[in-house]
Length: 287
Image 1 (cartoon, rainbow, N blue to C red):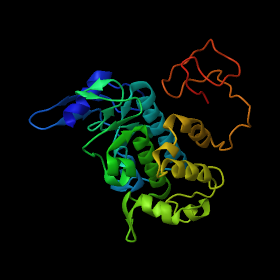
Image 2: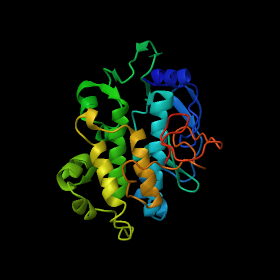
Image 3: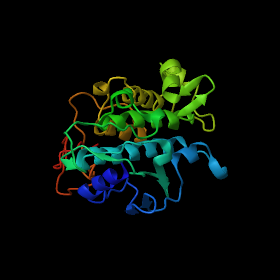
């Protein structure tokens, strides 16, 4: 599996993006090893647990990290054709300034073209070996080995709930084996979720603006049927509005000005384009 993952990265070239931890190299012997750039802020998991006495992340920092991760995953899916396969808070690394970056591509898989002897389709791959951290994995992958972009979408939903509650994905309480099972049983409404928000920070100024949108995003990402889950690229406008504090979407039929904005996926800016448009020339939504 490690060789297949390295073939994936080699086939697509080194994945370079502002939200992806730079992969410096890898080796097969004497033990499989991927070498990444050091991220000074540690992992999102460690920061949510306030490891080594670090202060809790603010609400704005949590939303910013979620937005960053969604951008990085959308880039991998739309531009590179790679499924990360192991999205979790421990693999979300924080750079200086609390910039969220995606790391650990040790089991990443390509779903376009032919990689490592496998013919892969445009939408999903059938795999006999289920990899990754099971409490982040969706049912179709655990049950049938069906791998698609929606596997990362599901895992992102778990990370959203982690950021909101600071509960662990595995055994969050004595009553629930996973955070997903707790979400399904206890967080069926925004009001129910608010009872479990991370108490290390004060959510009151943001409860009415950000929490309902993030609850909705998590709910959609954690849909049992993979076809009902959104592509992460479709969540970027919502997350951008939550990050800016303007959680209310624009009225139907109203376009978003792209003047002075850059693409959320490929970070390409076209300064000569101005006015009211929906899409950048690269075809991605601009918000």
